[in-house]
Length: 57
Image 1 (tube, rainbow, N blue to C red):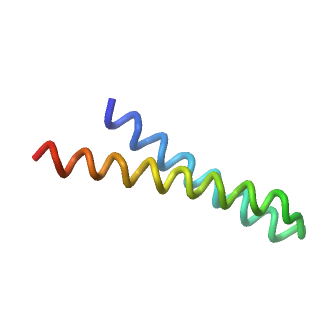
Image 2 (cartoon, rainbow, N blue to C red):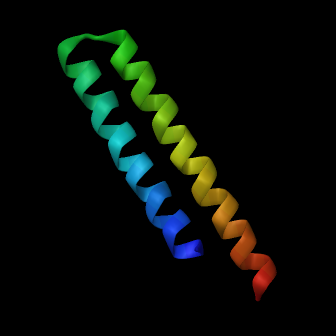
Image 3 (cartoon, rainbow, N blue to C red):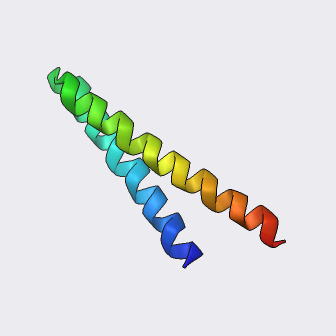
């Protein structure tokens, strides 16, 4: 399960970064904001998983 969540976090980060970059490229502020939000969500998920790993060991 943890590996699933870590992979999901990486996917969210990558997808968010792509959206953010695309939004900036075409000048679409909404797409840029969506990308930033998605990237942040992935960052938070990754931090949560790292915290879980710290307490397991």
